[in-house]
Length: 485
Image (cartoon, rainbow, N blue to C red):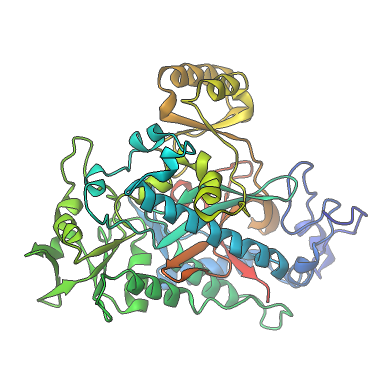
């Protein structure tokens, strides 16, 4: 991963702050900005040099004030809207690495989209023995009512893939998010905020993000029912109680589409009507951003959102993006089979591997996992936001024993993954640069013509020293992500 020769520590221009930029990369953990011996990676040299001339405490404080003034907020687990946590040090992705990553992301999203269509169609991949039927039938987000329709209206549209880097520098997909992937507006906000504060004379500049909202608009319009050249698109939200309400408002404004809640919708004669500015407007496309992502509940009855949208969906007059039923593609157990989907549907070898995931309903896999639970990461199959995750190497012995009993009792309720020590990135902590774990959520926009990727995405960062959970809902933050030209 580069030259191991010892380099002098990066220093502030004021020698009294010499240690502000000096930490030793930890053995066995990849540092995004520093080589193993501590020298900057080539793409970071200019940025770190200029940061060495800046008062980091002041930089972080100014950024925090800008976030508050612009009202960039995200909801916590208690439903409170708090200022979005954003670190001022951007992550840099070299051009050659992005050129390899971008087609890999598109390939994966295309494979997931093909799987969704097949699940609600012929299920060829199941008949071929490449994915077990039980993985679909026991999926919490499988929607049987959609499978009964002649042309199931299930579209992914936008995919947010959680990409991590291992200790050797290799990239892997930790999880797939295709139900309600959030973050696009935060990507754009991060770029506006960070680039507005860093020195203008920096000799490096990222690829622009001005096309991000355009990509979303093109995707939404491309999903419209046939014959609708100028479809009416609305963004359906829960309102201010939704954790990503800031994003909903921003997207509505940028795309010039109505922002509606469930109370604004009314199905009528096979069409969906939305009350916009006091009048009823026929809707062709719903961009669903509600917390409720099920068409039906556990008893098979319609959810409130499902009841409002089902008849127009069944009539073919409405398309929902990201649609009900897409959750079969980001189910944590199904994640174990995504590479096989790419081979089956696209007849290609996967360009970006998954973090190895074990199907615990398989007797052989379960036995192997139970023998080494203290080495693996175990997740509840239906969990999200890092909730309920047990990191074996960091868990207490009694917790590992309880987990083993739970797996034996209900193996299909859990999945296990190989432990990946997430890479680290220099992050401002009390006026110093300290290493914190990161991942990357890039966004893929799918249309009938293929897929496109927003350059970079949102780098998510854990703000606790040793925590591997980077989700904003659990105290994590974000970083601007610069893809170099």
